[in-house]
Image (tube, rainbow over all chains, first blue to last red):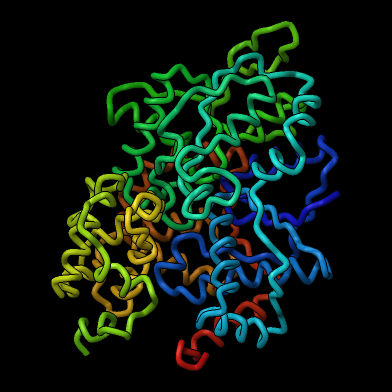
Length: 306
Length: 187
């Protein structure tokens, strides 16, 4: 069993450990990921602010390439770990399926470049695939080093469940909590889990925070609240969220005069830890901070790094 | 051409989102209440709609508020009339860009343009390149403040400096070219 994998630009940069841990986790569960040949940028939220049809066309090329690599007639599931890419692909699927003016123009443009989108390729998020295709039973079985009561704040951010609720609730999603619970963690109750981190400003990336003050404040509120609720770590599903919450903790502490140091990892890194994968395979060495408490319970693994 | 006749004349909307909003908005203010960026906006989303209903198109397109929106869709999910609020703000961004009235000194429209230019050329984005060029253009002195974070990322292999590129740029360029010359009417 293997899926088509669409990494997106951040997975090759600031979010490298997302790709590394995703590959490691899927490998451990016996599921392959075939990187889409010659994929292009999804357009993020910068392109739709300039040209709507071209923004649709960018993801349309990726979907068409995915279909080309897996001839029909069946559906082609394209795994997109970045929440921004995921939303861009979903938006394109819908724009092309509705048969409106944009669909006709984009279809024509693809045709001129020798491509065609049949509607077989569809975006899937790895969280959805892990919970609904692979299943929690198999994950609980494979969790040889359960997270031992790790108190984790599951952070969905904006674009994984909004505006398209494909596999979970738009207001109160639970997939990540259920997944990490199966891996032995103790997810905390966290109403802010779908609140914007301030980082969906366009293409993401370091140094950005297009509005540094706004990004800093929004991320600070999330970290502060997670800490107040006793979280040991935050699990993220998006490279932009992960970066915003992790990289500016020092600046936040100075700006708001309060330490907000907290480990912010990808949900795949925490899951991989429970599956007994080593830290290097999970890209833990790339994190700016990685400190998890000693797991409780006899079966707990040694997933602590000073 | 005046701005008002450009986008918002009845039946001549850029896309559906433009025309839907002002007509059906009940001014309840839910969008403004749930917006996480509201404190950084010069006009709230509700007020933007009120301004559109009152015909103040120029002021809406010149506002900073539309460029503060991160596109998180909280308003879209909560709108009791189920109006596509976020998509309409995207449409306003495009209209303000096309009309050339976006706030020139504000960072997000500059970022959007830089980003599009890079993606058009290479087919992929580069976080390092985008950040660097953006800061050089808008606030070079802030670069120093971010240098320590950038260095820590580089040491961990998280900030590749060489921009990535698709292998078949011609194919991508062809797609974008065709969309440059076609319009909604041709389709």
